[in-house]
Amino acid sequence: MPKIEGLLESALYVDDMARSVAFFRDVMGLEPMIEGDRLTAFDAGGQGVLLIFTRGASTEDMPGPGGVVPGHDGRGPLHMAFAIAEDSYDDWHAHLIAAGIQIRGEMHWPRGGRSLYFEDPDGHVLEVATPGLWPNY
Image 1 (tube, rainbow, N blue to C red):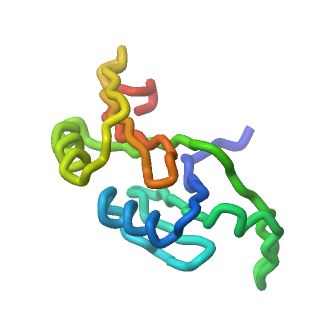
Image 2: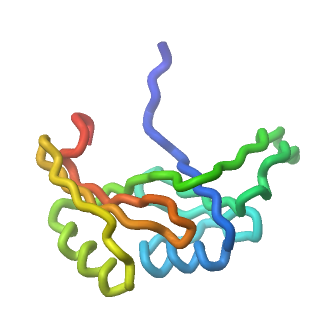
């Protein structure tokens, strides 16, 4: 069987692109790689890319010069996690509180990792997690 090398893209669907771009840029510290009304792509560290789509704007297939991207969309509060260093956990906690972000939960995992849970402006449940959460992280 061919081997998966890693997770490349994660997507969230939002109601207000400008509001979400400001959140992921200013609160989460991610840099936009491309920015538009329908899609903004952020450098999420390593080879990871966070795609933010305007909800409902990508339901149709998108033909282009290199091929076709099938239509897609998402509803409801989705979830994703960002990897952080163990020694930045307290800094992230303080940063989120200072930014007015409500911490929805914290978790100490059996393998030693820790997680902070909070929401983006569209109600998606975001997580920052230290190593020790999974056997491979």
